Image 1 (cartoon, rainbow, N blue to C red):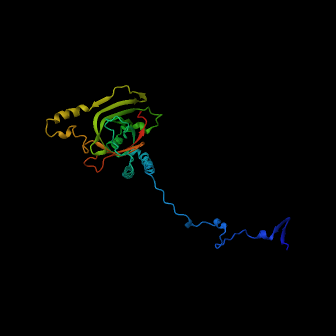
Image 2: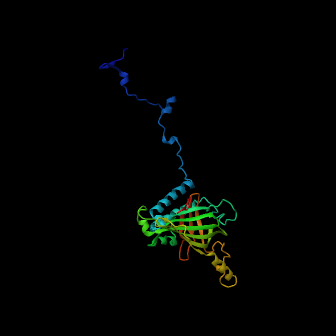
Image 3: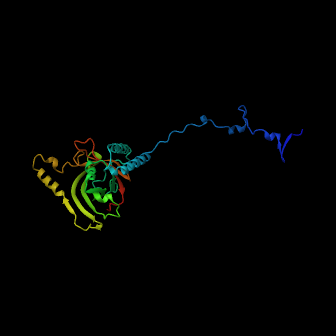
Length: 296
């Protein structure tokens, strides 16, 4: 029999072509077309949540710490809430510290390059009162602060100072001046404390670097040698009762005065905590990043 057709203008359409293009599936059949069916949520096993590595965790925490440091001028303008937040971040970083026995090689005796602290470190955050208080001076403002440990056991703390007024104006409008203070210490490991470094002060030097835009680093520095004092104390303590605690003997004991603890160190970041004073629950903390040089 002939199929009926509909004529629309010059086009002919089969009555079969007007049927909706719908495909039905019969669950009772074994046709291969059943593979085209829509998959159910029950067909695949749920994927376990991804576990973050310690590297990922530390990277995120370091980013938070850097943002906090930038917002509060390295800790000089930190609020109590900001310091609390920074302490929490540091404690979380300490929990994923990748470096064991972080004080190894600091004595400089083994001539090995395996010294985690051997580098130039620039401070990006601190809660130490003796450093934060430098920002309160109306005359001089602290600029860059470094800890230089390129030749263990010598560790040199460097603080650059600029006139307070200089920080208020663009560098192009005010001739720059800079005074550098260097505190030289001798670092040592402590018995029974693999992440503790003892410090003995050896000298202080004040060196003018720039004055009103002119280089003056050829001027002689003002230096104070502190090593002779310890030598004198050792001689006196050897025969004067009651001065034994002031001698250099026993300075490598874990709890001997003058030390810092390494809370975190890797190829990018160093975090240390000062020895706490009797009236302090915790010593001041420093976060420092590794840099290539300490040029003014």
